[in-house]
Every structure is written in structure tokens, then in C-alpha cells.
Image (cartoon, rainbow, N blue to C red):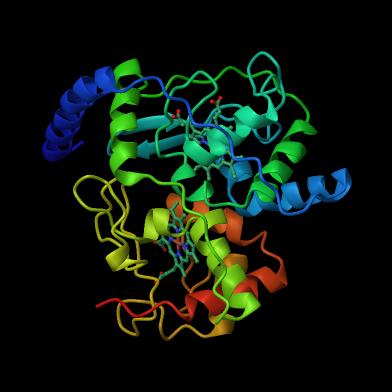
Length: 303
Ligand code: HEC
Ligand code: HEC
């Protein structure tokens, strides 16, 4: 970790402890309003698909251990330490089997655990919280029906109580649950594409640069980062900029990239992080893939 990151983290920590002490233990209440109720089977199928494209399956499964889908244990190396995804199978001892629907919703909508702890944003609830309630409930219903796997969570590299307080402060500055309203002037495909990009598939978590506080800078939406603030990676510009971005990629180029990770010049994305993204994109249905392309094609070129 770079010295500046350390100093930053230390400052944040100090301020956070002071503020955390003054913050009362107000717990967010789940937002349970749903537009439509679906039959249980439809819900489970919808939930499976969403868990695939939102990366729940990918992030919460240990790549070395293919038999324990959703049982966690995948490691994420960041400039702020290493984090392990937890077990989200319905195992009652080590997973989320005893969680109520409402508790699950608070986790997804506000990044707060049933015990009131704040999650590290390596779990991208900062975007996933914009998912529609019915979509989150569908995922809950699907996860509940998965085989329980008994597998203890691994401790994070920095999972001290105090650091979670720092997260609480960071969230005050950086996080607000945003509801994405459809834009009536745009097509259904564009609106679907934006919902996929901004909420479900959280492209901006990696592709939008962050300021020194680790807050996503939407003025530079999707313009990439040669040295990402959190992730140890060079993240490409995916705006319509024809030089630095993907402005020259055709619809076919993008569709091929989603399915195979192959770029127009024939090279293949091999970076582990693009794997994180790629193993969500290749689950997209044809119509969702096209919707995502429609949206990406509308993202203004970076300057
Ligand atoms: C980029 C990887 C990533 C993605 C994508 C992701 N998660 Fe997670 N998730 C994590 C990590 C890491 C944590 C632990 C964060 C912490 O320790 O503060 C976590 C925590 C959780 C928790 C809390 C579990 C507990 O025991 O407290 C739940 C529930 C959860 N994720 C569900 C989901 C669902 C559902 C999705 C898909 C909609 C999802 N996650 C997508 C990485 C991810
Ligand atoms: C977990 C981080 C992460 C997320 C989330 C993510 N990406 Fe990426 N993406 C990367 C990285 C890293 C690369 C660079 C891969 C390489 O080196 O080839 C990349 C590469 C790309 C490229 C190739 C661009 C080029 O010029 O090489 C496209 C297109 C792309 N991503 C689109 C998306 C879209 C669309 C989404 C959301 C649906 C998304 N990505 C979500 C990390 C991410």
C-alpha cells in the first residue's frame, strides 16, 4: 500500500472514531415496496439470472472450489487490504439461512448488516442498492433455495471493528441509495441498458475514476483510470471517445466482448478484474446484451 493511502486511511480513521462515537445507532429500515408480485417459480428464475449478471455468483464463489457456489471465500486484493466474500448460502450456521427477508434488504439497500455493522464497499452495494426491490427479493428467493454449504467466513485483512466505523463515515460522504427513474424520452432498451450498467452490473464501480476520498467522480463517468484508487489495475475508458475509449467499437464488437472477452483487435482481456466483470457479462440474454450496447453507445466521449 502506498504511503499516501496509509496517511489517508489514518486520517479517515481518526475522524471516523470521533464521529462514530457521536453518531447514534440509528438503523435503516428496509424499503419493501414492490411494484408487482410474481409467482414463486418465476421469481426464482429471475433471481438466478440476476445473481449471475450482478456478479453475486462470481464474487461469492471461490474459484478454486467449484462445488461451493455462493459459499464465499473469494479474495479481493485492494490497495486497502484483502477482503474475502462471505458465505451467502442458506446454511444456518455459516451462511445467511437465519436472515429474514427484511434483513437481507437492508444489507443490499444500505450496506448495513443485521447486527448493524457497515460493509466495506468492495461489496458494491453502492450500486447494487439501486436495484429494484422486486429484483432484490427475487435474488433472496433464489438464494434461499440453493443448497446450504457449511463454510466459515474468512477474516478480512483489515476487518477490525474500528475500520468498519471508518466505513460508516465514508458512507456519509460517498453513499446514497439512488433510485433510477426511467427516462421517458429514451427507448425501453436504453432504459434497461442504463439499469444494467448503473445498478445491476455496476460498471462504474471500476470504470469511473474516484477522487482522493475514494468517491466515484461522475463528472468523469466511465472514463477509466490508469491507476485505480482502490483496485490494483489499469481500467480502460469505456466512453464513446474514439481514441482513448470504445467509440470505434461496433455493436458486434461489444456483443463479442460480452460473450468471449475478445476485443476488436483480437486480444483477450486477461486481467483478473475484467474476469470479475466478464463472468457476469457472458450470462446476459441477447436482448439484455443489446440493451447494454444501446446504453454504452450513448455515453458521451470523455474529454
Ligand atoms: C465485487 C464482488 C461482489 C459482488 C459483485 C457482490 N458481492 Fe456480496 N459481498 C462481497 C464482499 C467482499 C462482501 C463482504 C464485505 C465486508 O466484509 O464488509 C460481501 C457481502 C455480502 C453480504 C453480507 C453477508 C454477511 O454474512 O454479512 C451479502 C448478503 C451479499 N454480499 C450478497 C450479495 C448479492 C445478493 C450480490 C449480487 C446482487 C452480491 N453480494 C454481489 C463481494 C461482492
Ligand atoms: C470489477 C471491475 C470491473 C467492472 C465491474 C467492469 N469492468 Fe470492464 N474492465 C475492467 C478491467 C480491469 C478491464 C481491462 C481488461 C484488460 O486489461 O484487458 C476492463 C475492460 C473492459 C472493456 C474493454 C475496453 C478496452 O478498451 O480494452 C469493456 C468494453 C468493458 N470493460 C466494459 C464493461 C462494462 C460494460 C461493464 C459493466 C457491465 C464493466 N466493464 C464492468 C474492470 C471492470
